[in-house]
Length: 243
Image (cartoon, rainbow, N blue to C red; front, top):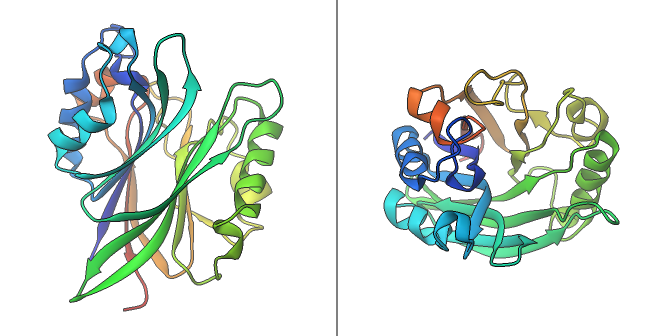
């Protein structure tokens, strides 16, 4: 059984080129790629620029990814924006981990346990949704902090674990400097996802370890995806290696 994960910085539903707010384009893009779980960044809640919508609930309703978790990261004058996880299958044990460093912009990781029906029984894995900082050292410190905190620090090496999101990994250094030494593999070679209209940088990444195998990794390149956000969605298909 292949499972499909979609990682997507939705840019609050504001188009990367036309700067228009249209959450419908994000919804249609997610539905086109039909993920089993979506890890999203820059999701608005109660912000005037996005109609004061609670976007996580609108997205869950419109994509039939009815299990949801939301993490408020950045507080604005009115409302917040942050990370969200939407799933076809139950999400449990949600944790919010603060990755903010000093006076820099507030950053966080969202960690959940994902329960998936496989061949008549239930398998579980841990998912971590991140939106990392803009400097290389900041990103490395943030990932090491995430790995040192509960619940990730206590996981066994064979426990299926995925860490993904907008890693802002401009120079593709996180794999070699942090993730590979910690026992993670990258989900395929880096895929360019930013800017959406003409992608030059692989800012969105997925790393995994434990009893998992990646089947394929690709960016969504539909014309609508090129308009809907300033990032393209990153799609990773994987399967459990132990029944």
